[in-house]
Image (cartoon, rainbow over all chains, first blue to last red; front, side, top):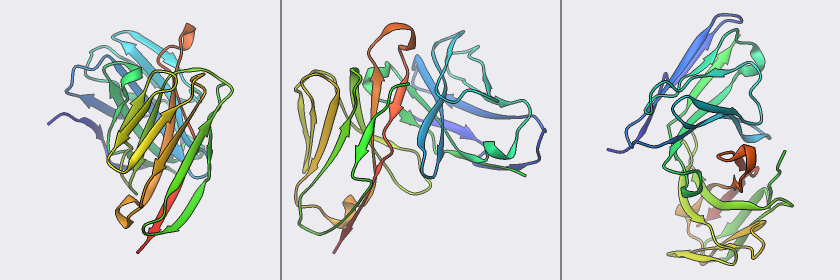
Amino acid sequence: EAQVTQNPRYLITVTGKKLTVTCSQNMNHEYMSWYRQDPGLGLRQIYYSMNVEVTDKGDVPEGYKVSRKEKRNFPLILESPSPNQTSLYFCASSLHSNYGYTFGSGTRLTVV
Amino acid sequence: TQLLEQSPQFLSIQEGENLTVYCNSSSVFSSLQWYRQEPGEGPVLLVTVVTGGEVKKLKRLTFQFGDARKDSSLHITAAQPGDTGLYLCAGANAGGTSYGKLTFGQGTILTVHP
């Protein structure tokens, strides 16, 4: 089944403790992207990648890092999480950004 | 920063009524995508429109891309309770250094009452 898999689905952590949210797609897509969704603010793009080793900042990249060492994986790294990074995070992939994205099921992160 | 203004934010209607959701921007997009999201799940792609003036139909849903590729609309005919959900529009960047960037509208929460 074609899908984008994110892990974990739920995560509660403490301020400053480094964490990684994994994202993997099995569709050989070139484009991958991370979003956060907050009430009243909608979906905002954090980082995106157009291919292996090619990444760029979205609208809200501060406090996040990404890497794209393989085509299928696009992990999101929070080096020192803070409470304002509490949010619902989505990873998505696409063959081409014009074609529309397939989204993962989301990761609900709480930073206390 | 590109902005995509989606309206209305909330829509509560009776089964059988028609409705239209709008997405407007001052920026040109290479494509306009519409998604539907259920609570606790990721958005699911409904349609992508690429050509200015393009109209696509998906059963009772009609999607239109403006001639200048700056705006789009979603029209639902004879809405049903199963249409209830969050509808999102998203514009893909037309080119330049931000190629691949996707900007979302704020979303429209649609409730269709039986």
